[in-house]
Image (tube, rainbow, N blue to C red):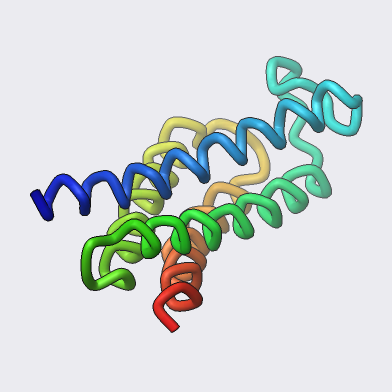
Length: 124
């Protein structure tokens, strides 16, 4: 039963990060602050803003994961960060033809430390 609680903890953190990220993207597009992704406009300030809020959401995801973890909350947050980093690397490979590769690299590099930070905040 503990394994199911562990899976749920990591899934809950991942779900939170995904919903917050997609929700923020949606609101920014609908309010006209950023153009829709279908336009494939990759302006550096927009990517920097996205990196900022996604970093915050990674901290929140790590916190949520640690909160639901049945034991060893920091380990669960690190597992979430590893999964997130792997997904970022896949995205980087798939989108290697796009400009501004720094954004994908920055996501891949920062995901694990920020989820760890969220777990560390909760564990204290």
